[in-house]
Image (cartoon, rainbow, N blue to C red; front, side, top):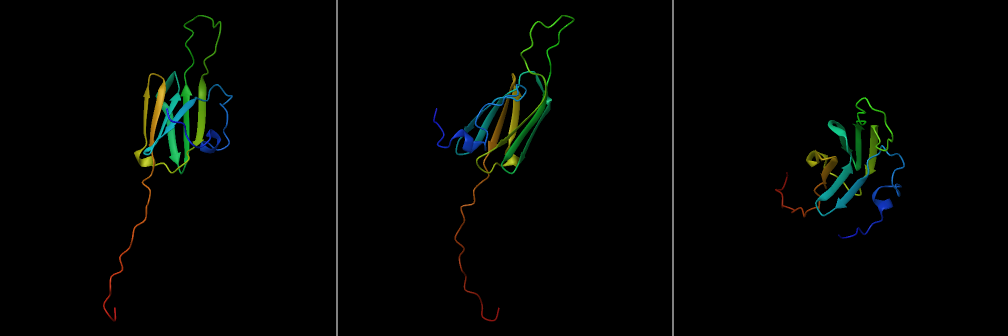
Length: 133
């Protein structure tokens, strides 16, 4: 796997460590020439209760994770986080929200976030106009 040339702090603003709130889903981010692939770990979430928003370079993930059903028993230990969560990440380039796709399978939310087509500029030909125009 190729390492990124930029440090993680640069990629995601001041975020240099893992979130301390267990409700916040961890994420893996891979960048290639086409865009970014973000894989969030959200076991127990209902895809209908997950919202993804891309505005400018900021990606926001909100959702709800269900608690374990105790089925008329008593909990002896609770380690899985449940409840609402929110995660905000700043991408290191310009994403294309219109082509962004999200898939939730087996507790993993995979976001495919393409980069906007870059404008390379172009040469503008100068055409000789008619006199008096």
